[in-house]
Length: 169
Image (cartoon, rainbow, N blue to C red):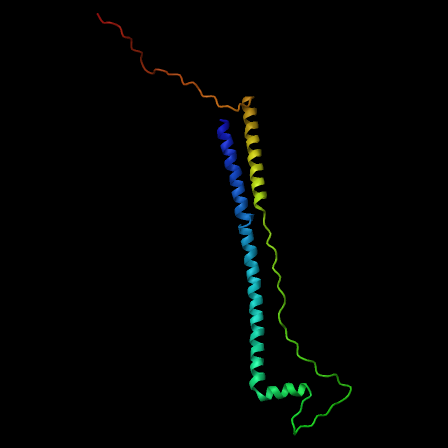
C-alpha cells in the first residue's frame, strides 16, 4: 500500500515539475510570449530604420544627379554661382543644418523565467508534501503507518454442497 502511495506522490511531483517547466521554464510558454513581444518591437524599429534609409538614399541620389538640389544645398552653405550676388543681413541667425533621425537604440530586454533547478525543487517538495499527507491520512484511518507491505493470506473456501466420499451400499 505504501508503494502505491509513494508512486502516486512521485507521479504528482513529476507532474508539477513538468507543468512548471512547460509554462514558466526556460523554454516555456511565458518565455515564448516575451520573445514574440521583442520580435514585434524589433520589426517595428526595423521598418522605421528602413524608411529613414529609403529617404536618405533618395536624398543621396538627388545630391549626386539633380543640379537644382545641389544648388539649393550650396546656397545654404553660402556658395554662389558666378552670375549671382550674395546679400548677408546681420542680426539673422544662420540657417540650421539639417539633422537626420537615425532611429533609437533598442536594447534587448532580459527574458524572465523560472530556472530548471527551481522547477525541480518545487516538484520534489510537492512529492514530499503529497507523500506525507497520504501517510498521515493512512495513519488517521488505521492508527498506524507501516512501511512494509503485508500480503493478505488467501484462504480457500469451497463453495457449493460438500460431497463426501462415502461407500454406497
